[in-house]
Image (cartoon, rainbow, N blue to C red):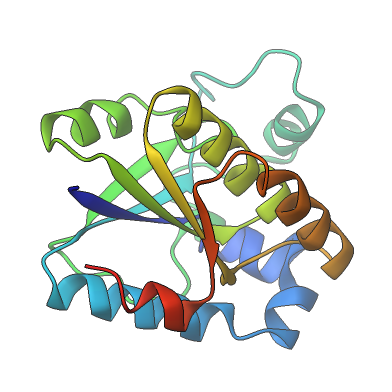
Length: 187
């Protein structure tokens, strides 16, 4: 089964914003970098996915309180520091960068097309926030027929409670929920 790693929203505005406390208490960045190194060593495609809008906020979900608030504050625009990947995450020029316009990683023009063109069937999820982008991404991946793996200790949220709540719900729909060490055994 052809596999891809989705590294979601490791950007300044989220890692140093709503997920800052969680990231400071948990080694999710270290674990994600281990996953990235493993995937590179095994020629597994890596996608770095981030929320990033153009200057007109094209594609913004019309009734989203979260993203309309971001628009009012001028946040998450391409070129702003808040959409840049954090320095400590391993982004390589050979990786695929995808900009999305909502919480779900599938709210981009390129992701699904690229996955299908590359005949990817299995998606490994890491990123933030477990209760937003990971939750939605895994659910949509399930509905589209992908095999979804969550690397729990490479994901984070605004709180331990939010993270655990999402993981509990995702146990019903994801194919696997593993830790980094288990994920490193996959090829």
